[in-house]
Image (cartoon, rainbow, N blue to C red; front, side, top):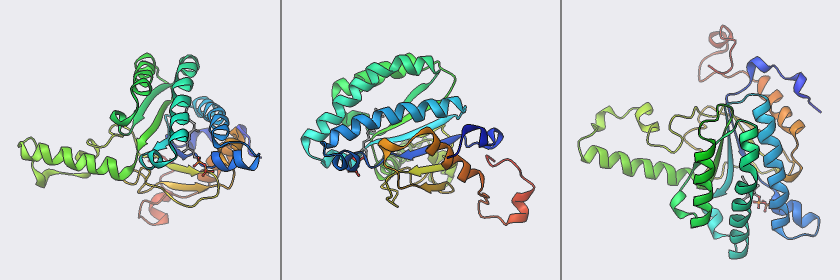
Length: 253
Ligand code: FPP
């Protein structure tokens, strides 16, 4: 088990993204309905958010509900939405106590009214917090996000606001939901699945990937530290050779 003390606090990622997977299997293994796993998953969200805030990470992005998740049985979608409203209401105080700022990425318009209203209230309340930014991906998928960016950018070209020749990586990024947020240096997926599932496809071009068989409800702070310790062992080259990056001791650059 890795402890916080074993981490090099000078070489932590600024941004960690997580695909929280395995809630349903965790519940089924215990002979319970799937929603039981999602409820336990909320406790893990709390624990990992606090761990990230304590470590002074800048961004934690959690895949809470994908565009594809709308296709789950109606009862599960409704239960997840209710859980989301209840969690946001209950946890906003804790976000304030931990100086955490809440943000969302995804198709907010697709969310039921009460979910969107509660989220907006919590975003507004936490907007001046200066610690960790907790980004919830809700009704989110990368292809939706990229397509949406393309539509907006084409409108701006059409209206003469920008010139198509002048579209750079940096300009394109300002049209994404994650505009202003640095790319994640580390992506964690739980539950033993080795897929990206339409998550942050543009943003993870150079991200280190960490897969674990632990199911999300069983994922503890120590598992999070283990992923961070593993990240710290890696050499990030960004297409360069070892000797070029050896001069650079900061993994964040
Ligand atoms: C994946 O497990 C998990 C989800 C689709 C939802 C994640 C939601 C939560 C942890 C609760 C709400 C979140 C917040 C931020 C308050 P799965 O259902 O795909 O599990 P399975 O692969 O075992 O079926």
